[in-house]
Length: 139
Image (tube, rainbow, N blue to C red; front, side, top):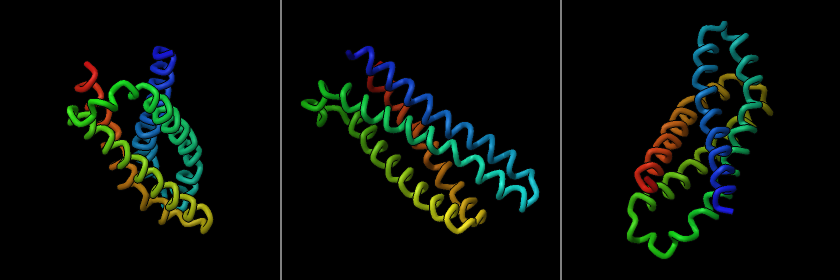
């Protein structure tokens, strides 16, 4: 069962981080467009959020299962505690991005949608930090 959950975890990781990488490249492409065209383009890329959220759900659900043996020694594993803290931060950022993009779509406001970019970059950096901490913890 552990191997199956690890596969699910890696699928979730590829979906969630893949969304971050895609958004970086799509953001660069959008920056080269005219303002009116940029808004339309960015609204079309929102479909990626579904992939990212699905990946995050797979990561968290499989991660909760795989971390079960470590709960007893959590206080002796500061890197694991830092990783879990980063996961909480990541979920919070995703929630904030979701609220902002939902509002941008509802109001049809490309400027509000563009204001999500710094949060997306922070989200990406936190996700990479989680991967690095995972490697350091479970090497």
